[in-house]
Image 1 (cartoon, rainbow, N blue to C red):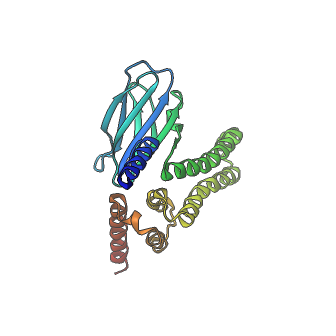
Image 2: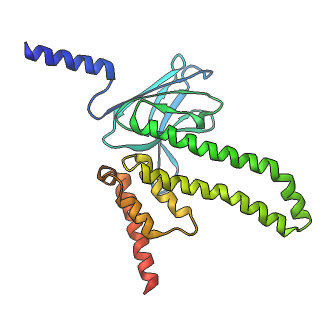
Image 3: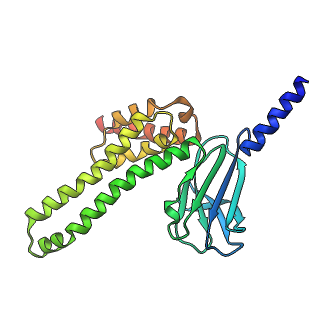
Length: 241
């Protein structure tokens, strides 16, 4: 009797979740594409930086699905044949779902798993800063053009200084996110972006990495970033000699 109950529970779990173990299932919906349009699940080549397809399916009745195994989180992209832009997601075990607008593929949001929910939160913060930055550019493009024609360095420097505040906000937002989300795969992916700050503090970046959850540092991405940090540390030590 006990064995039958365990088996019944296993069936319920499987039917509710769709996947188990290290399995993943990506369920997507996109309207307006031709039936049979190819959908590519891609990764970035470590050497060339170019996208490489790791799986391909077809659009059927406006929907598509990818299934497979994900032993650890990985950054992946979804692209549609003959359409510009790629949707970014975190490939990880569990059910991942999305509804994509064919006219704004790059803005697609993925739900259902921890890191994809975190990616949505992170992107919403970044988009808010980006909107303010673009509004600033739009409102001041004429002023900048006039200042350049008149060689008015005072106005040009003032506008550039104000614009640089948005760039700094991107960097500080990344740093804050890492500090507040030590178990998020997004935090791990953000570590290399800290080097984008011309005044980056290598010691501080090492500290940020070391504070991350140990499970993140054991991933292939975590080990790669650790090597980058080790190389940077060696280079800095060599300069001091």
